[in-house]
Image (spheres, rainbow, N blue to C red):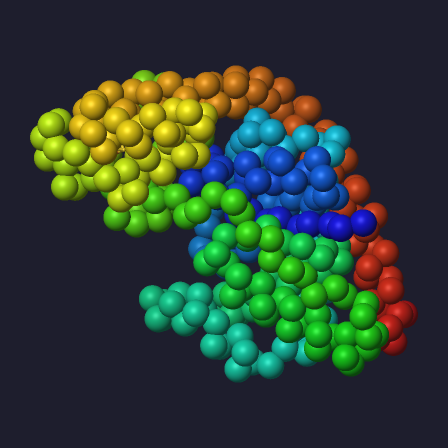
Length: 324
Ligand code: SF4
């Protein structure tokens, strides 16, 4: 049976870029493919952090994923550090991964350039990523276009380990591209990102979302309401494509090109469709926040299910490697 693994950092609340670019896809995939969805807290500790903040952000992320539609009856949702086999397999993969291959990773080079002293965990981060995926022998990883390169190292690790210890044991996971294109921030300049501050939080209330949408950048060539616009260069149109029904999307393009309406009108329609999708998510999040025991129980079940699979893999891996 095909199996996917998806990991997400415990960054607290999700923004709509994370939701459209990844989580909404996971929600759909959980109905057709066995899904492992992991909040990767071990990945979050490679930079200095405050333990109480990490605990809170991990809990918030789990609540937001559940509210967004991850169904614990269908998908295995768990926190990485509750399944210690992730780090055991990562160590094993570290022993067969050439240093040069890790040093060449763009992410490592960027982070290393910004810091005086770099933790070894930052260098080894892709090895842990490979262990995350291969521990479940996942054959598919849902990714955005910009993440395909990261998966190549996992495939290389699988090939190398298989060649050395057990041909064909680990699958070489294939990328499955998320259908939604890269979501730009409301500044229209860069990818939506918390660090840039151009995001809309998935759990933000109706008024707060409108306060962000109203001044958001549109087609820069459309100075007056009477100027025809080009929806293809407008980020608001991209958001319509993500949230609005097909007939509205067509209507937006016509109205924009013919200067039939102003950008504020266009944004009000978008805001209505965003609300229709996001209000139920906010309600579910409020219910889950009021029931921390339920969230705890879901995570306990998820970790137990993940561990069942992880322990079988590790038993077999140890056997192939003479570690039993
Ligand atoms: Fe963008 Fe809508 Fe304005 Fe056209 S009318 S530029 S799609 S906000």
